[in-house]
Length: 430
Image (tube, rainbow, N blue to C red; front, top):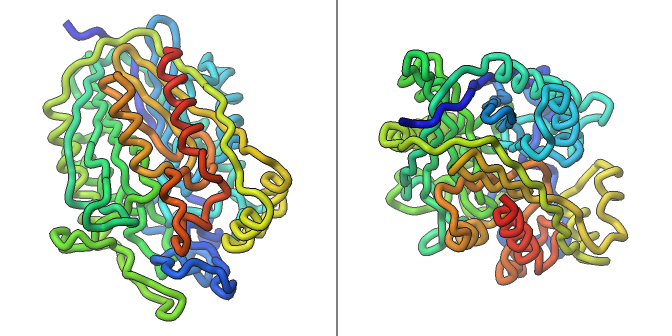
């Protein structure tokens, strides 16, 4: 018989007021003589703040309790979360009996959310970070209050035609895995919720969109809600640093970003039709995985936090990053200047035989695939954009002149190796 656990899911609306500046397409410095030659789409700065809401931005929490120990996993419809943001959530949930190492906070990386920390747009005093922390904690506490006996099952699916490697659209690596954790009520067999993990940038909506949206995650949630009435959907992105949606028709295997240079800006590439198609397609794969999911052995949740020191660019290279990305936040600039390394952490979380590995920043897919292949752990759910923002974590051979990500990260070569070492330590510590 499947081992039961107490589980529940809950959501809170974290959409800020209309008029709040958005993030995802900052005012990159296109006037710099050394700007990358091939900037695909990212140069399109929004020329105004948000003007409406297409779909609500959510914080969705999965609360678990087994063996007298609690854990909380939260997914947010934001571009990023910071270490300070995560620390605030963890400190608040400590009052609810959840140890910091058992709290995982991950951003979906939607490019149609708010500038949470006023790094690019808006005033720090009016940035929505504090309100978002409060609503994130509220979602977690609602889930903790609803805990009921449940069964957990894990299913793995595959979706290999909706995403492309934006560095190599034809032959580049992608991660087609659709991981699903299904929580089912032991009381009546109803589906309480699904955790859906998939590696793909939520950038079907371009910089001409001024409506808050979770991007394709919106359609994923709506489709699953119709299939499983009353169930919540918690989305977790993966190692998607260089993975974009494919442009329709998918058989062309073309990046949704229309190839763009400084000379042909602006170019627009996608909209809500594209978001809906991708979200529904992902929902179909998630439902197949959910319906063939197998029960997992459940034990007391065990989390581990392993510190990692990521090498930073130095001197002119770091200044180029800060100038090109056009950060208006002096606090952010000061946090990197004059330092050799950026301190962050990797988190592992075990719930019986289920393992989650949470990585900070935008991790290139090749790193994620290598970690999965060598971890010796199955099932393993790899979570990107988790607990902190360190920008792009790239393989050493990805630092190619003229490419956006090469300039668009403060991290130097060697960061992938440092992250992978910390990740293996985190898994070994379980």
